Image 1 (cartoon, rainbow, N blue to C red):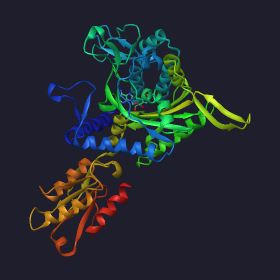
Image 2 (cartoon, rainbow, N blue to C red):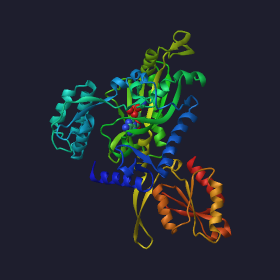
Image 3 (cartoon, rainbow, N blue to C red):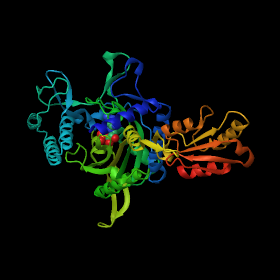
Image 4 (cartoon, helix red, strand yellow):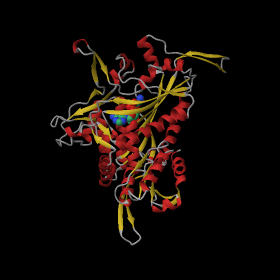
Length: 488
Ligand code: GAP
């Protein structure tokens, strides 16, 4: 990360705290590493992103329905899913500082340093070699690669490393009050398994025909060893996942469909295409026959925001084996090759999985801008503006009577009452109008409306657009329609 990028990222983190988007968790006790709380504007923005995703999945696709499964699941779930045996990262400890690191993060950081030094080709070669060795699980060669690259611990400054070992990322806890009798259960590391174990419940009760999807949003937990970059990598986070159940053999068709559909969802928020790229996985997870990341260019470089995974029938087949309950679907459609119904099979699954918190960070990164403004008299001023897409902005409209007397608050309240059933509005009477505009810019409110003395004469108000700062007089009864159009 260059100094400039680092400064921007630090400015976003400070802004997020100062303006009530994100706070460190239990801050009065000095916080808890990689756990965060969302403040008044943050919780609104997060909810709006979640709703926007939910709507795009369950309202715009007639063949996708939602569920809300519990965080706690029967412990065998995680044996069947492979998480007990496989959900681990290769880690290495520095013997001097006793600090533990993820090996891929150390090598990626080294590649970033090479790139910043203008050695892009060397960086690419390093990452390719890392992917190859990770895929082969050749930990001895990976350690040698670290030594060859002279990677040192940032705390001790030495390369006195242990061997590389795998560490499981699941949090465990006990069910029941008496620890000795208790069963160990896990906090779910992904929401997807709640969908898989409910596959037949949903298919039967909602009378779904393949191809169909099940969507879910909710908390997931991972004991990330190296938790960093603010809300990018957290220990408690939220996922928005959709499992799409398809006929075996058609999975690549649907994989390509969802690859495009999901990128289009991001672009529909007005975020430019050049900020995104696809990254095909070389090392496939234990359940996948194809996988890619949708990456976004964060202030610290291109990083994964969403995964599209073709998970084959791995999960349903495995749950069938462990539970001894059939996880089959009867497909009555006729197979043109045989002239007979496709019959019973375990469906294949294409999954779309996006981190809500990571999407939130993406929106902040896209929206945050520091601007220098030149006034009419030639002097300059500055503002921080959050260009949050209007449809997900925490507040859509700020209603600001110019003064808190002369009947202006009463008119403003009338407008507030007309608008607030439709979208989130903010009302404020205090401080000079310029100051109030700046505060709304800083929390990303796309429209401000000012009621002044002239309004009493002609029912006209001043609408101010956040991004351009253009102001115009419009009839007060047009405000609702203008905002509604912008957020539709
Ligand atoms: N069900 C598949 C699955 O969980 P994943 O690639 O491990 O796949 C999906 O996670 C998404 O969840 C990621 O693209 C990322 O946006 C988000 N995510 C994963 N780990 C995270 C963490 N520690 N903190 C925040 N978001 C995370």
